[in-house]
Length: 435
Ligand code: NAD
Ligand code: UGA
Image 1 (spheres, rainbow, N blue to C red):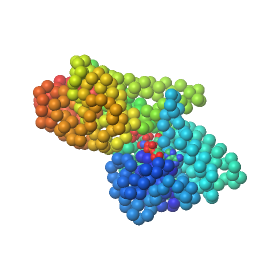
Image 2: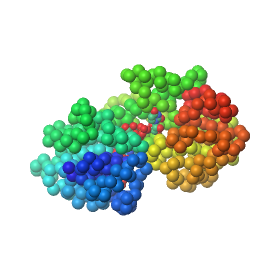
Image 3: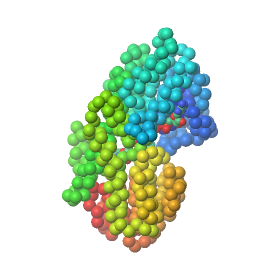
Image 4: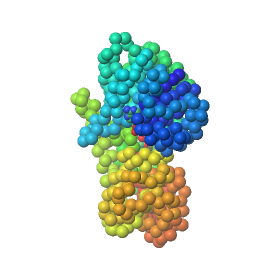
């Protein structure tokens, strides 16, 4: 089939590349010309393990085309996927749909024959209805089907999530569109029950309900971790003891710093906004948002406590600053809250992240990016394990820090408190006993 992905970001690029690997011809369009030039030169604009190899293979075989020419791509394609961003609107909770409607207004001019328009971007319930109104307004015959196909991939695991999805949700009542999309997804759904056809509004809401539920699970375990610290219990035992109950499930029960990323924070906010619009009180989701915001402050205060409130000129090392490992994405990472706060208290921050230096910290005095782990840790007073990259999982801290009284604050519970105790290293974690 011939596909057009509009927006070559984390979702559009990954799904476009994977669709091309399944034998489709994929036109990836982005209005950011720099991104397109980079892709045409064989470079990736994002950090996503495994993506480069598949991209290069399909680019070479001319199944992947990168362009800024929307008209050309739209007219070639049978199915058009809208994959542009839907960030939070400034000073509000609602999803900013300006990029979606910019695309839709362009599509209005370029559609020349029957096309399926699929929203892969996460959009509030009833957005599909609005898109349909715009696109069908001036057309006498129904030449488009507007479908919702939310994407559930995770950054850092995006290829695997896309190729082996738990489910593919298709929101449409068009038999024709459903049949075509089913044949597109057939090679990856494998089991019939993994392909779920529902109404367009239901598909839109499934996406928000899923993200908000996962955010709730994380906040729940994070709050349990707070209690564990008080009652002398290890949160990892609680996660395991709870998670092995299949009704609860083991995944997404890892305590840590506040959840971040481009989606959980913005999607929980947007869901509240939708609920308000439809006069429904989603009190649980509201509490999750508050709990997650509060967690950033809670852990920052714990850092202060560990350093006995004497932060002036203390050297603090952040191992990892992204919101999760295997991505370069900094959107809503808790380090964006912690580093400026600690820096304001005159601590000297060094950080290392395998995905590279972050422009977000460029303007902060005394915040320094280090290229290797040894220079990041050398003579540090406090090492904060902020993101659980593999690179940080087997470190010999004594050899790295080369200083007597340093402390570790392991926000991801990677290391064993007992081993740290035996090594006589002062160690703090989340929801576990410190020594
Ligand atoms: P992104 O910011 O990485 O990429 C969006 C791209 O769209 C950008 O490259 C931008 O230049 C391009 N764009 C914007 N307007 C355009 C236009 N008019 N024409 C062509 N290109 C245009 O965003 P993302 O993280 O890929 O997220 C996209 C959507 O998918 C969001 O709604 C998000 O909630 C959802 N989503 C994201 C993830 C994820 O892991 N990031 C997972 C599932 C769903
Ligand atoms: C999340 C969802 O998992 C995807 O299904 C969804 O498609 C995506 O949002 C989206 O809509 O964009 P992502 O944000 O890439 O994916 O990453 P996650 O693995 O979900 O992690 C999100 C945050 O939760 C990270 O900060 C991570 O550290 C944190 N987390 C996750 C925990 O603190 N504990 C856990 O057990 C799991």
